[in-house]
Image 1 (cartoon, rainbow, N blue to C red):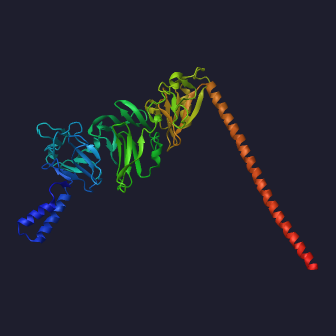
Image 2: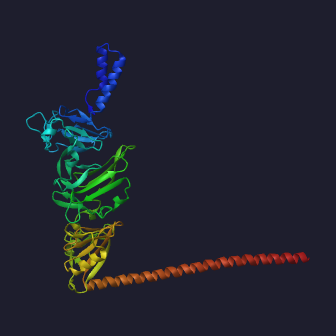
Image 3: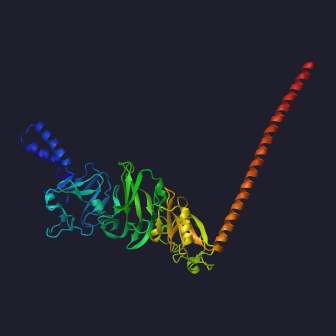
Length: 501
C-alpha cells in the first residue's frame, strides 16, 4: 500500500466541486480504496519519495524514509507497521545517509533499485543485479508480509531480496550463512549507535570451519560462540530447546550452510538483534503491555565470554565463592599468580607426569559442558563414540574426543591441539573425554571407585534405615491392633460376668 494523499479528503473536494451523483462518488471511493490498498508494489514508472510509505499486503511491515533517534540524517528502511513503537529491521543506505528529505527510491529500466538524494547524478544506494535484456523494462518490487523486500524481473522471477543483505535484525525465515553456489555470505552487523544505523563493529556470523557454529565477533575477535549443531540445537544454548514457538532449520550440504528460525504462530512478532553494546538478543512483542520481551540473550555470564579460562581450562559460573576457572584433569594453571588475581586467560599446562603416548594413558570424562571450540577439530559423523575413543587413543596427538551428533547417537569430534572455550552448564551440556597419563588416570579411577564405594555404603545405609522404619511401623500397627483386641475381650468378659448376676 502506497500512502500518499488521503482518499477521503480527495473525494470531498471532488464532490464539492461537481454535481456528480453520490452513488458514483461512493463507487469511486470504493475503487480508489481498492486501488490504494493493492499497491504494495513498485514498478519502473513509480517512485517512493520521502513521506511515502509502502505497506505489505498483510500490513505487518512498512517501507519508507525515517530519522533514527536524535539524528538529523534520513535513511530508507523497513519497520514493523502494526507496532506503535517504530523498530527498524532493515536499512538500505546505512552508510550513506541523506542530509534532507529529498530521497527518492526508484527502479531503473535495467531492473535495479536506485536511491537518489538532491544530487541525482550520484546514487546513495543501489542494487547491482544482472537482468537479461529481454526481461528488462518491466521489473517490479514488492514488500512481503515477512518483511522481505524483493525485486522481480518481468517474468516474476526474484532477482534480489533484502533478506540476502540483512542489517542488525534477523526476522523469521531469513537465512543466515553461506550460499556455496554464489559465495554470498549473510550475517548481521550492529548499528554504530541508536542514532546511527551505520555498520558497527559487532557482527553475528555462521562460521563454517570444523563443525559450523554461530559466532559473535567484535571486529575479527570472537567474543561468544553458540557451540556446534548436534542435530537438535546449538550445544552452547541449551535454553533454546524448550522454546516451543520456534523451529530451527540447519542446512549443511553442497549448496548451502545456513540457519533459519521459523515461527509457528505467525501472529507473533519476533526478532533477533545484534546490538551496538555487543550482545545478541531475541525479542517477542507482547501486545497487551505494548512492549518487547527479551527472553534470550548472549553472552549471559562471564563464562560465556570466549576463551575466559584459556587453553585446557573450563569455566564454572555456579560456584559464587570460588574462582570460576579450573583446569582439566592432568593440567594445572599456567600462572598461579594470575589465577590468584582471578585472571584465567593464560589457561593451563600439562602436569609434570610421564608421557601420554603408548604408556598406559587413557581418558577422563568431564560432564555437562559446552565442548571446546571445534573449529579446528576433526569431525567424522560416521563414527560412534567407542570407535571415536579407539581412534583418538591410537593417535598420541589427540587430546580429547566427544560426540558430535545426539539424534543418531553417533558422530565424533577429535581435538589435536588446545582445548579452548569450555564451560559448565547446570543442565543440557554434554560429556567430554580428556586424555590423561597413566598416573592421572589411576588417581581418577581410584576416586571413582571410592565414590562408588561410598555410594554403595550410602545405599546400604538408606536401605537398612528404610527396612528398620518399615518394621517399626509394622510392629506399631500390630501392637495397636492387639491392644484393641484385648480391650474388646475385656469388655466381653465384663459383660458376661454382669449377666450372671
